[in-house]
Amino acid sequence: AQTVTQSQPEMSVQEAETVTLSCTYDTSESDYYLFWYKQPPSRQMILVIRQEAYKQQNATENRFSVNFQKAAKSFSLKISDSQLGDAAMYFCAYGRGGSEKLVFGKGTKLTVNP
Amino acid sequence: GAGVSQSPSNKVTEKGKDVELRCDPISGHTALYWYRQRLGQGLEFLIYFQGNSAPDKSGLPSDRFSAERTGESVSTLTIQRTQQEDSAVYLCASSPTGYRNQPQHFGDGTRLSIL
Image (cartoon, each protein chain N blue to C red):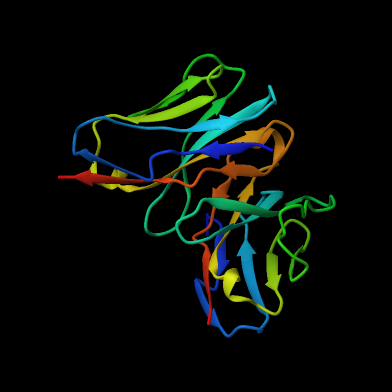
């Protein structure tokens, strides 16, 4: 079974600084997708960024980028120029190609200090 | 509305009672998912609907849990004879087709508390 591990229960960063959240996963599949979701206190899960495993190029979305290391099964999220609104729980998720359900990590709580 | 809508937002009930949770997906989205999020945990997959296909129920934790979906619209998740371990936030998500892991759009969830 696929598993997703987020080894940092909590992280903090100063406003305008850069922070990296870690995620590793375990799978024997070759066709899969990886996601980072943000969950603010409002509870709604918001998609931050998505990476297809067959793409070597790391995905980027404005201040958010990933470091996808397929051989190491690592998928870290880098947030640049952190803003107060970035404070939230961040979840890494895995989806197998051809399957629909996502497997989530336990999350990392990010605090942004002014 | 434009997003996934869930009701009620919060539900408190006594142990042993049945509860129904409702999800209205984004219009036109054929795929619908239910997840459970226990306090301090990630999301656990419960069930998935895709169009008129048989649902994937592989994540339902017991036969007390069931879900229905009418066509490509509203879904209800029913928990019978609730237990305290059922206390959690229940999140619903929808996606356009469910194909190739298209991003899932989530509702705000229902926080269920069993006394």
